[in-house]
Length: 407
Image 1 (cartoon, rainbow, N blue to C red):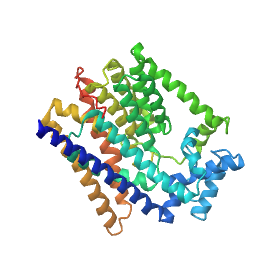
Image 2: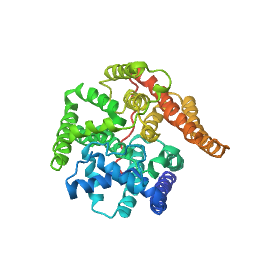
Image 3: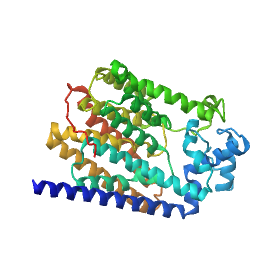
Image 4: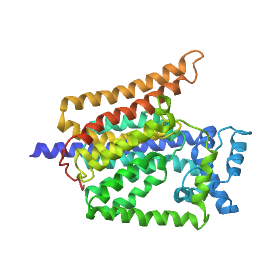
């Protein structure tokens, strides 16, 4: 018994040490990025900070093209051709309004630190809920890979907004496991800050919530909070919903992963989305701790990452949560296949860096580093997650009694 107590104590100490090292890492990265002027000004938070200031100081529309034109002039001295704009639902100002009160350099540091915190906090919550990885060493390895994988680094460097939804998803999942459905719905509203990442996931959660009366509190919690999220920015910009959708016409054309393969008239995207929703309906009564729930949630993230037109690799970050959800179920179902999946994830990490470095150093091949890494993470990674999610969506429900951890 004493041996078990000592081992548990050692594990706890290792996890606390990992948390401290994580804080040091986040602060260090934020300080380095904040010290480089070109990184500060080209960060995605700059235009949103600028537009929020203009909204409060001059009552200018968040989605006004003037914001993008003026930011282009400040950053590049000429039009960049990238058509910068706010391009987010206006309730993003819940995050940008406090930053708008700060000098931009301070705001940039705070935001760079915040997006990293959201990311690691979401992973930490999901790990505590599922119990995977089970050891401090396993957690450390997974966290290091998550911190240094290229989409994560790019997300941090350019001050993106994907990790808001990740934290909301982790908190919502934690509440669902405790049958606090109203709170789960409240936290799920964070998924609407960047809906292009989470639309299919929200469809799954609503299908699941409507399937049993006790779960309807999820819908109520989501609906009430969503109304407040609409009202708060409407105080400053009453018609922001119409302005938001109107601004999307200015966005530069982008392609989805399957657009690169075969997707005439969006046929493939529609077919994959409908197929996923049919699987969601089939598993609508599944328990939160079941393999089928984990499979459907993960499949929703993977399919949407494939079918929704988006630039860059930032949108694949939530798939890290899918990995944490799926792995304990694969460990229970097939330890041999579990090891293959784990080795596959490590290979993906290593090959991603090799592709980036080789593409960057090839003579006359500048740009290949982005093309190759995007091919790997934007196309292959979602396919990989979809492949390991699908068996749980198709099989009869396999429940895994993951113990709740209230420590």
